Image (cartoon, rainbow, N blue to C red; front, side, top):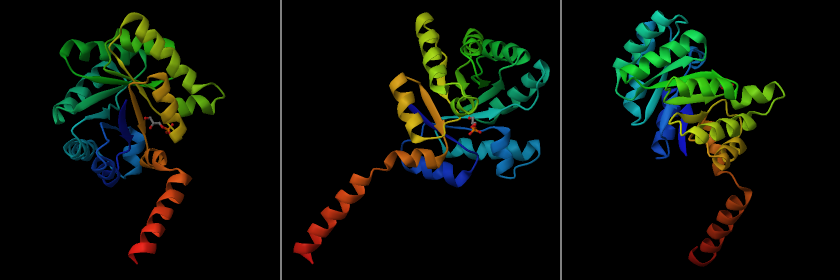
Amino acid sequence: MKFFIDTANLDQIKEANDMGILDGVTTNPSLMAKEGIAGNKNVWKHYEKIANIVDGDVSAEVIATDFKGMVNEGEILAAIAPNIVVKIPMIKEGVKALSYFTEQGIRTNCTLVFSAAQALLAAKAGATYVSPFIGRVDDTNWDGLQLIEEIVEIYANYGFLTEVLAASIRTSLHIKQCALIGADVVTCPLKTIEGLFKHPLTDIGLEKFLADYKKVNG
Ligand code: G3P
């Protein structure tokens, strides 16, 4: 399973990359705004910086919501670096844009996916990745993980090559559950990735090892 970090914060991207477990980055307009990056040119420069830090794929989201606008913007984004993947919202014009980019050999990530039916459409249009939002589904009292299960099953039924990129991950338990289900990718904030390290017995055990070492070595 690939690990992507879901942030536009360069320090956090570097920190996760330095652990040697990072396979890519996802961003969205909200995450860009959180870093105070404004204006198209600055946003594009920021994507270039991110794409230079990591070897893996970096999802860069279009702002346009019409087909022509998404195509123009997506082509600019894709030209920034070879590891940029154009992120397109799951709307009718977006499906058209996904199909266009598939024909052009430009890789895509279909975002804002909340149902298996939407994921089926994204795969039909040849999306490289599909991004179902687990946490936001959970917030509406539906089951985000069940959504991941359904998409994984549908894609396996037909041999779709679209990778299931589980997004809106809120806990490190979500990451383990996605791995059990067989999601291809998880994208999460740094603190959620760091949650995977934690186990009280590890801390207690390490403390004891070091204390025992000190007893005989001073
Ligand atoms: O990748 C999508 C993600 O950024 C959404 O996460 O926590 O805003 O629902 P969240």
